[in-house]
Image (cartoon, rainbow, N blue to C red; front, side):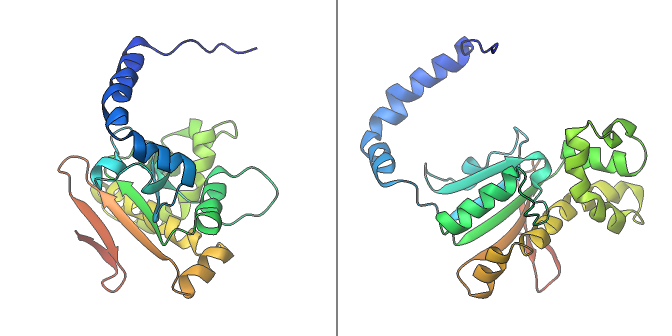
Length: 215
């Protein structure tokens, strides 16, 4: 049994508009994608936040990016325990099956997940500490980042934790043997970026400078 209902009218109208315009004007391209399969050059791990529009930000065409979204754009540690791991499965597929050459972790400002992690770790969100909280257990990935920024002035902590969400994800990615091997062999590069939603700016992590710099 399920309780699924028909799509809301506004979504149906938008779909029909897309089908009659964008799809109709590029039908050959979509047909080619269907026949030849996807060949994205990059994988982007971004937040579920509806304000983060990766394709629009980079002006991407259909089929250009392999995109995985989750709460706070986190990558968990490499844990081959036979359980179900959505993010790790997406990463494995992108690297080993699609052979992407760039893997980008995209964080953003005003992230609700990061703010929730900060509240949980600082003792202000006990509900997230419950074992039954899927969000809380997911945000445990970011706990080491909270430990790093806990000594900063309070006003700086959440922005710093948003950067930590990117850095910890990059660190965890290098814990995947197939990623480390691809990076060390020069077949793939990792990138970390932060998107400022309010003013549209993008910051990328500069390993040489050891900080995020404006693009």
